[in-house]
Amino acid sequence: MPSRPARLDRVPFARARTETDPTATLVAARTVTERLKDGLSGPGCRIAARRLRRLLGARGLAMADLSGAPVWAGRPAEHADTAPLLDAVLRTETAAGRPPLVASPLYANDELAGALVVYGEVPASAVREAAALVSSALERARLEATAERAAQAEFRALRAEISPHFVYNALTVIASLARSDPDRAQDLMLDFADYTRYSLASHGDYTTVSDEFHAIETYLALQRALLGDRLRVQVRVAPEVLGVAVPYLVLQPLVENAIRHGVEPRAGAGRVLVSGEAEGNDCVISVEDDGQGMPPQTAREVLAGRGDPDSVGLANVDRRLRHVYGPWYGLVVETAEGAGTRVVVRVPRFQPGVLP
Image 1 (tube, helix red, strand yellow):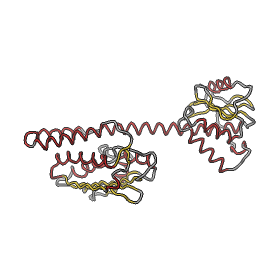
Image 2 (tube, helix red, strand yellow):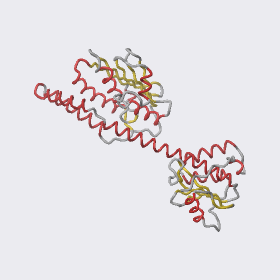
Image 3 (cartoon, one colour):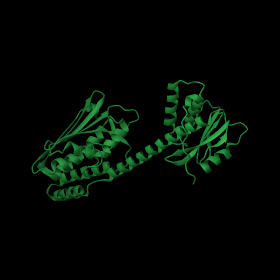
Image 4 (cartoon, helix red, strand yellow):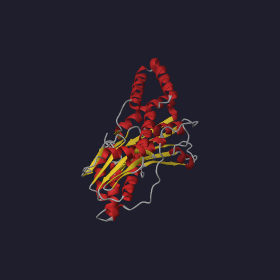
């Protein structure tokens, strides 16, 4: 396959426009990038083509993926068959044509992704610069799609991750109570069924704080049966946050970690406090234990996904929160050696597009 041609010096788009307002140019460039998030075959491609045509001051502009089917904006090229031109670009990966009809290849991660065709008296250098903008948008879209698929795969793995040790112990305790305390055994079996149903069933992307706290309570009921007096639990949640929508399965991993790393290693009893309350326009949920804690650097490594592999899902939860609400949200871990650990989740009480 021919190597990708070197990029020439870039020429500002405004030189090809009849209007040189830099703000309008930047807004148009941003619109092109945003509308191409689904690629050249997505629903935003035609809008991106329109903005790019106006940005260049062209009579017509088309973008085509590797299938060669162009999406036109403005006036299609008159008295000219663009099919041979597109075919030449897609086969040779080199610019082709001559004014008033110019085509340039489009790339994503150094792979040929399609072609850009411009109809009108537009400098070839401006066409190449427009192709560079579109190529950058396609590369960004591919990277975001790859990251999203990876996050979803990790989330599915988290859903399926039920500790075999916990399952074995829970069923053993339930079996031991079947004769001595059949009513409690039945209640625990129902709790176990609720726990597994919520952890493994096919849910949407979002649920409510109420449902997350219900899942926590069933999990804690099973853990109390396993640990007995060693586990002291306090759960407090304000009524005004029960209906807040949150990403599914963001709280249970925090409670599981508090018990696994805060309570179980202790020789005596340990305490777990789970609370949820409103702070202005935010919902703040915290999970706190009185275990040994950890150095702050260790907590940073855990959130970065480089820490203890037994720290169930914390990095996954942190990334999902930041993906949904923005980089200023996510988990906050307050800890120190010998001082226990407190993990705080802060989410908006109302977020467009986040519905249970």
